Image (cartoon, rainbow, N blue to C red):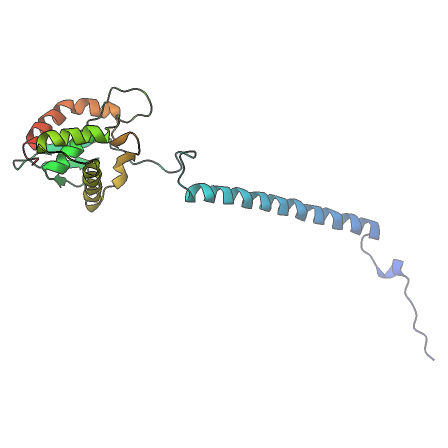
Length: 201
């Protein structure tokens, strides 16, 4: 019978002692727990942000920049239509009725200092009243909504953002035009309105 010689552990093992190994293991596990906790927090915040973006809410403003008109060119044409260019973009030709609506919502009160930096809103009733005066017959409020929708479609056709025309359930409509620039356009709007109003039938 052959007997194998046993080597003492103290001579065969040259690593850290068991107590130190257990301490190292606890440190690594603790670090992993901390990392997992941080990852969990990040995931929670990401879900909150995603819910904010996917749900339209007035409670969370300015998630995206609002399109604005900093520069507006308005040129009446011989046929009572209107040539419009916003921020130096492509020229948009509007027939008399759409031109009238555009002028109305683009010429909101520029002196109003309450609220944001844009011109004031034009109510649906005020727009309807102005169109009724020229057409000479009773019109419904849906007529205004239809014209504004067509106006937004025209903007998109020329690669403008349709949200340049802002809509509010109670306040009505307005062009997202800066107040300080709108003040210099009063005379232009007046001349253009006289021109296009003759073509509103």
